[in-house]
Amino acid sequence: MKYVSTRGGGETYSASETIVKGIASDGGLFVPSSFPTIDGQFVDMLAELSYPERVAKILALYMDEFDENELLGYAQKAYSRFDGDPCPVVKIEDNLFVMELWHGPTFAFKDMALTLLPHLMVASKKKLGIDEKTLVLVATSGDTGKAALEGFKDVDGSEILVFFPDKGVSKMQKLQMVTQEGGNLSVVGIKGNFDDAQRAVKEIFCDNEVISTLKESKRAMSSANSINWGRLAPQIAYYVSSYVDLVASGEIEYGDKINFVVPTGNFGNVLAGYYAYKMGLPVNKLIVASNANNVLVDFFASGVYSVKRDFYKTASPSMDILVSSNLERLLYELCGRDSALITRLYNDLKEKGEFSFDKDLLDNSIFEAGWADETETKEAIFNYFDLDDVTFDPHTAVAGSVYNDYSIDTDDDTTTIIVSTASPYKFATDVLEGLTGKREKDPLKAMLKLQFESGLDCPGEIYYLSEKKVLHTKVIEKSEAKQAVLDFAQSGNTRG
Ligand SMILES: *Cc1c(COP(=O)(O)O)cnc(C)c1O
Image: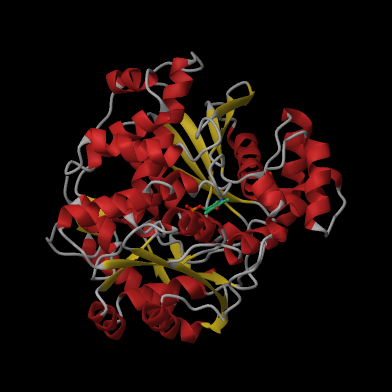
């Protein structure tokens, strides 16, 4: 399997090259040159396998320079860090299921890929004969940062530097990051929002001064954001795996199409679902759920993607994003892989803050999109608990609310999976407010009360966070991000 850039000419890359590079040098994203296919036999075969074995089978279709056993070894190591089944599919109503992707070490779905990516990165470098150190740069809207830090902490030959919007993440998300221990990492707050952090990081990737300075100290940059193929590929596996589980339990028959509802920010999660569909997984609709930052909803309705709009801080901070990077990969497929068109669109976005895409192509796709405001999100937390006895974090509640609207508008009763992306305890104050209507500002009290209300155990790692020592206190202007990378490369840390 070879890979190409969404903005590139004819050049092709191996899977390991895409993982090591992260982003193509023309600014485009790496995509597989074609999609491997899966069928009923493949689904039956997966039914007998554990989750890591399923992941290895699916990755092997995309990464043929890796031996399947080698991939299995990495997947077993990665998913042994989860508490039980990494991807339980829970029935909450007839034809309605929740896929819980937050049983990993940092309690958000980012762990599904970020526990595995470091293994793929180290192995890819070995295959390519690269002995430079890898400096992993991360821009996070809250959950990627912690998951990437945990993944790359003390990994040989790797360093990791995380930029987060200082005022744009939840208390718990921030505490998780600024208390991170490890000798090869640093965490820096940026005065700005996620888009500012993401833009700064993307620019640094293409900055010749940074590239050559790093080269002098035998380092090269890579990305742990969902622009990295090594992040997306493992995410395809859980779409397939949840389908396999529904077939195996007799809830559906092979060939029945199902819907997925996906709380969406950078479009990585839902794009993995689209890739599963492109492989032949029977999917009816992929329903994109946004919060008040509903740029994608407007885009699917009009064909115009415009970031000239207000940015809102919401109770679902990991979706507070205006520039959804992975949309580029979807548009590349929908327009028939016209890289000249994609280059033009993304130049327009950079220069004019917007672009227009053929609306017919969007209408004919399997995508639907909807959004929930803050009140609707809280209502969804209450209603799903009340009716279905399930406790949603605010991101998942956005998806729940959008699904409600969708099913009322369309009468579609297709079997549906709501993708649940974080533990409610990462956002205890807001979840508790949704459940009880009362706001408990003290996060520890909120967790105890949430435990009482929901009956779900609070993970000790979250409860005892506030007792951990804060190790990272540096906050910079977004214009100083490049210097922070250069400083990090000199000293190995940026602690201030
Ligand atoms: C990252 C994240 C999302 C958004 O996922 P994308 O892949 O960026 O679309 C949704 N919910 C939670 C809890 C997240 O951490």
